[in-house]
Image (tube, rainbow, N blue to C red; front, side, top):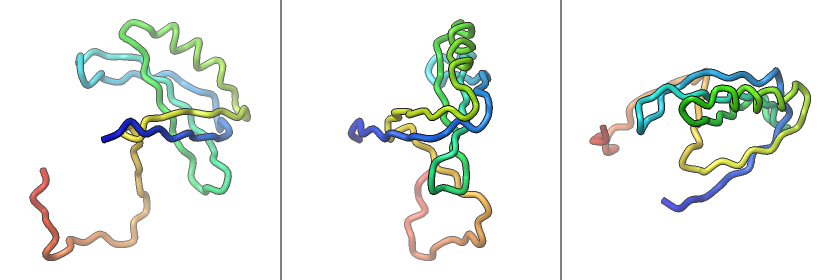
Length: 103
């Protein structure tokens, strides 16, 4: 897969916060910046996350303080890290004859 990037622009909905996550490679706990943004023309907010290195909690906290409610931000993200969540599905069903051999 190519290293295609997408740029997301939106208005910060609430103060940014730092949470912790498990790094997939090292299995260590790392600080992760969470910013909820409102995107013009969209009815649902988007969550932007940025992971920091192990033991860089103070750097993540400093970054969180920069993103105030109401400020407009731009985030560049590799497409490989884009995650889409569909909420309130009306119906989900298995397509007969479709290949279902993926784990």
